[in-house]
Length: 210
Figure 1 (tube, rainbow, N blue to C red):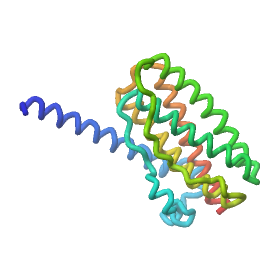
Figure 2: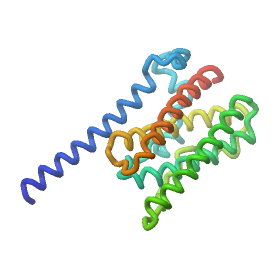
Figure 3: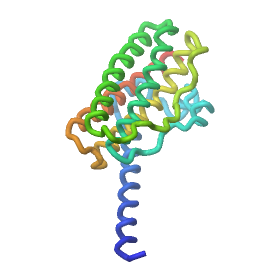
Figure 4: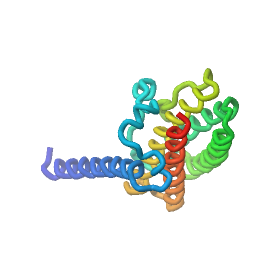
């Protein structure tokens, strides 16, 4: 292998690692900064264990997906990701007893369904000749047999990590240079910011209710 090829491969690998480390640092910052909402539940490392965040079902299913590799990759993964969230939100809406959770389910269904439609339009317009199938691994447990508090707690636990995955994918797209169309950057920023704020809200509810 030529020396120049080795150098190029080394630089590429280093760039990918920098992006991944940057994404993880961003997530850690989001979940540990001095956000006013977060102050209500910033009660130390025991929070994750007490709230069930380390549930074996979540851990075994793989809390985070692999990193994206292109703008097209972001779109197909985010569509599948959103579809899982909408499906889970529909189960929540039909079975929760809390008004807050019903409204949250409605917000997810409305917002993410609209985003799915927009991403599908972009895929059809920008990548009409590419395969849009994706090997998506579900991140959330089966909620269909749960009711009341058990449903609310499981939904919040799983959706926090589900949202973190969307934040990471969106941040990677923003900083990686993968975006080929200017419209997708503010779109990804909106997903990142909205779901970051919802992570804070869900953590607050878990601390308050459970």
